[in-house]
Each structure stands twice: as structure tokens, then as C-alpha cells.
Amino acid sequence: MNRRKFLAAAGVGTTSLVGCAASQTSSLTSRHSLLEQPPGSTADALVQPIGAGMMPVKSSMDRVTRTIVGLRPFRKPGPRLEAAKLGSKDIVHNYGHGGGGVSLSWGVAELAATLVKDFGRRDIAVLGSGVIGLSTAIQLQRAGAEVTIYAKDFPPYTTSNVAGAMWHPVTLFERDQVTDATLRMLDLASQIAFKRFIGYANDPTYGVYWIRQYSLSESPMDTSTPYAGGDSLYPGLIRNRKNGPFGFAYHDAYYTLMIDPDIYLRALMRDFTSGGGQLREIAFDTADDVEGLAERSIVNCTGLGAGKLFGDESVIPARGQLSFLLPQNDIDYGYAGVTKDYGLLYTFPRKTGVLLGGSVDKNDWDLRSREDEVRRMVEGHAAMAARLR
Image (cartoon, rainbow, N blue to C red; front, top):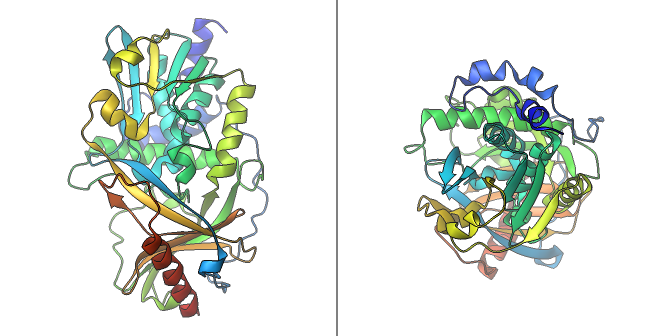
């Protein structure tokens, strides 16, 4: 593919990253028609009505299969998505997505590809092989670029493999530090990403499927701000409804997508390499190492590593610990809520096991599993199951 064809294919129509999200959203359909749609089908989901009964999660220590710990790349001002110079090279920074990396991945990948298009080159280096790096690389590849991913680790050894990955962008910024421009970008990225993920739903090759999700609260819930991307991205959404499940006073509920990173990231790796993409194992210690790459166009998707590599002191870890129970085929729902006795608890069903979570520990770099956290989550979710009505 020649340069002109690459630029035309990569130009997905985003005229301004910080422009009016409403006007940009109106062009989503035309932009998506230019892109190769992902495989998969949207077959009827095996999910019950929002108000249907629920089977209890069987939460006990003897059903725990593993515990994993990951450090989300959190930036108080929100994710960084912008073009910059790195010596003689052009670079697009695409990192710092906190707890929304998987959810936002296709959206920020498309926006990043639009910025790369302006560099006018076909050979592209992508730094990082988590979900942001893989999605960005595939997006560029589908537009006709020759892409090489450079990373220290590859799936299943990335932070993305430790993501909860229920589709709902969260833990993205501190409200008093985020700009309106970043909020508009996140809404647009959410809209793009959700529409793309639907194309993978209920395809076992990708590990993406529909679930019903409940946000639980003992006090009235704030409905003044829409969910990320707009409430229309959450089918069946009800907000601040009284007398919720598990005996909570209030709840929100909606349908959303569960993305199993262990399956999904393997599939993205296959898609990238089968499309001719190259993988190079390398550890970058300084920005000078990046300048040494042969490619002059670079996309930085190094997540938490971008702090040290590019001197960004605003990116910090948000530690998350997850435990998994033996799978239950009768669990088609997830929930999240703060309890009096056990603090924050959330659970999502996966084909590989029932995920138990409940920790977002900012500025905590500890990757060791904490036994007291395992017990808090297991006992807390057992108590939640006992409250089910």
C-alpha cells in the first residue's frame, strides 16, 4: 500500500481531538464504514432480564483457584492522548487509562491512529503490548501501516491480563484535575470502543459476552452526570432505583459486556501477528533508548512505565488485587458496592472463573498478594450471597 492509500485509510475523520463531542459522534457511522470490522457476531445473549432472580455466588476459600495483583496506570488529570516531538521523531502518547484501559481501548486506538496519520509515514513503532498497545497496533495495521510492537513483556504477562475488564470506563481521573477537553475525548473514545466491542460479543474466540450489572448503594445515587460516553451506551439502564438486590436501598442496573483478558488478549495477539505484525522484546530505560529505534513514528502505550520513561510524574499506580473462584455457569450478573462490614466489593462472571475484587489502592506499588485481602473479599462476597433476595 502506498503512502497516499495509507493516509486515506488511517484518516478516520476525527477533525479535532478536543472539539465538540456531539459533532464528532455524528460522524461515527461514516468513520466505521472505512474500517475493517472485527470478527465475531452479536448472537442472542444468554442473559436474563434485569429484574430476574439471581443465583448466589458460591464464595468460600476452598473454591479460590488463584489470586493476581496488578498496578493500573492512573493519571489524576486523566489519560494522556496527544502528539509530541521526541528529538527527531514524532510520538503519540496514549497511556494512563487507570481502570478503563480495556473499556476504552478501541476508542483511544482510533483517536491515536488519527494523530499518527498526520506524521505521513507507513512504518510505525508501538511501545507496549497491553490492550492499549495491541489495539492501537491493530488499528494502524488495518489502515495499511507496517507495525512493530516493542515491549518488555507480552500477554499473558501484562498489566492488562490483571484487569477486571467489565465494560464501563472507571477510575480515569480526579474530578478536580480533569479538563473539559479530556472529558470530551473520553466520551468519544467510549462511544467508539463500545460499538467496536459489540462486534466481538458472544464469540468464544474473543471471550466477550453480555452480562447484567448492578451498582449498589445504601444512600441515594447521583444521577446528575451521565455514565462515561453517555447513558445510551448502557442498554436497559435504570438509575437510582429503590429496593435493589442484596438488600441495598438503591441501585443502578444495566446490560454491559464482560471481556475476559486471558482469552481476549491471546486473540488480539493472533490477529496482530497473522496480519504481518512484528513483535520485538526490549526494555526501554530512558527516552534516549526510544530515540534509537529505526522508526520515526512512534506510539507510546507503555502505561505505568511512561512515568519513568518520559518523566511524567502524574502517572501513579492504582493497585488492584483479584481472586478467582471456580466457575459457575448459573452466574450471568456482576455487581459493585460498598458494604459496612467489608468495604468495596465487586464481582464479575467469566468462563474461566468468578472474579472477586474490591481494591483500588493508589500509589501502592506492592505486587505481592495479601492474604487478608483474599479473605476479606471471599467472606464479603459470601455475605453478599447470603443477602440475595
